[in-house]
Image 1 (cartoon, rainbow, N blue to C red):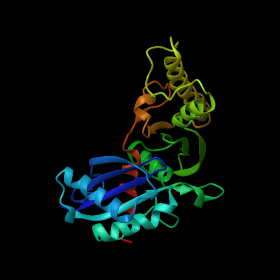
Image 2: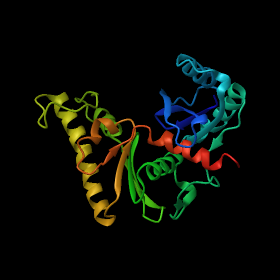
Image 3: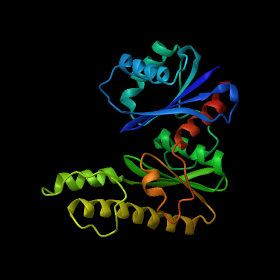
Image 4: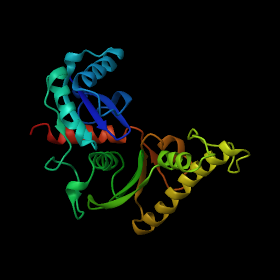
Length: 262
């Protein structure tokens, strides 16, 4: 067995997924893990942590022959590069300018587009076709649009729901930190319930308000949601067609396959 380790490096979390390369380009995700992004960790700490996660699922470390990284945290690039070489004896593929992807990036400054957003779009195209709109509910909430010519034409970036919750806690002395969950109802009967209702339904209203305008401009677009909070709020949206928790990892796998001979 030959394994591909795909790693999505975000500002809040690092998500790892392992694929069996012997099953071909459409190989399903075997296992995935989510750990906190910590810029102070060394290459040795990340290497040992990655290995332990694989061992926990009974994977032979020698079978990890390839790695692909999509990262929006540049300070960690040399750390993870060293980790890959030292602990897996491989030079990873980085999703960066010059890498072959399925879509054309048709925006003013293509080099500014984050690797996670590229992977999301590639995953959405592979799974659901075009035109497509991806919604990533992470540290930030991002919307990305691919037209029916398979061109990435732009998107939107706004604060994520956790940032909004933290801002409430920091700027309002009497408001506590709260867990982001679906409330019992839209009207909160105490402070915590009121905050949870406001954050939850405010996020859904924001997402649907933007999607309503995007779908009017791109009729027939499939809307795919991903990210840590996609399952929490995705089902309440009027416009989200699919919730794909592993969209980014599947996109990274597809990008690796397109570049494997290079």
